[in-house]
Image 1 (cartoon, helix red, strand yellow):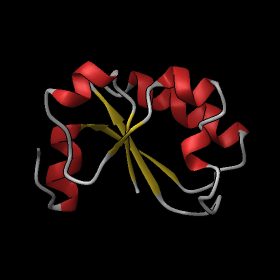
Image 2: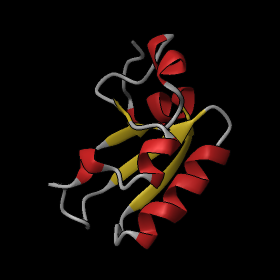
Image 3: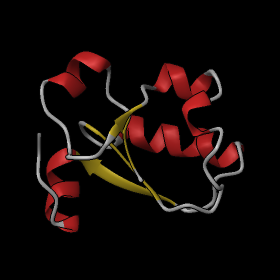
Image 4: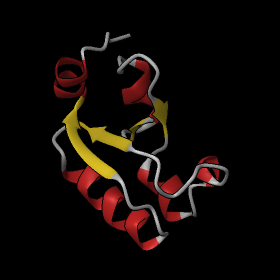
Length: 86
């Protein structure tokens, strides 16, 4: 699973194919989009510079998620996982 934690306007300007958009405010509010996701699922999280993704990882860890990867930004995630950008 890949999560883009940038704001919706940033996400709309381009993102990793298949990434879902969950901004930090939604994560702080409990990330209801992840309610049915197994806590051990590998989740790659990225933003623009890695700062928001790092903060989001800390919050998600506090919610019990255990397999979180900071992908830093969309370009690095696309390159590392051989994915397309949309």
